[in-house]
Image (tube, rainbow, N blue to C red):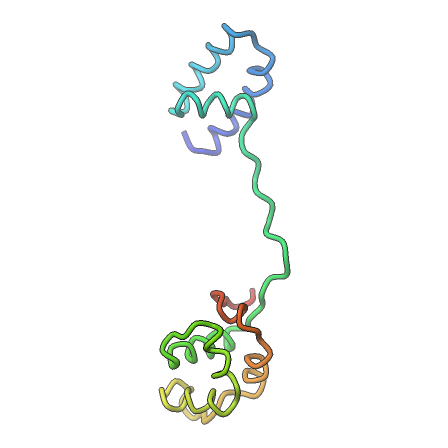
Length: 138
């Protein structure tokens, strides 16, 4: 039995279990444990409280990074020897940023320096957003 079916069964039996007397509860519980394979105490909790509700989505503004920005940050992070975000931040200033990328040969072929919009975006970021795992915007 798949987990969704188990939770649907728990939802269906929840109101009947709550209204039942002790002997009927034992019978419902025995049948539920046999059908789902759940531990008896977990089955009691499910039937008493109902299946767990889905957690709400995380609140807050999502970070938005474009694919070129993420790639440039990754290349800089590798070029710096995998520094933490607070120590990586000074490398995002244009002169050292360009030097680090040139030194490690991580710029695209024919590209002598990062694009201006990439540099501007990196300089505007604070350390914590840099430190998280950047993922491209959808």
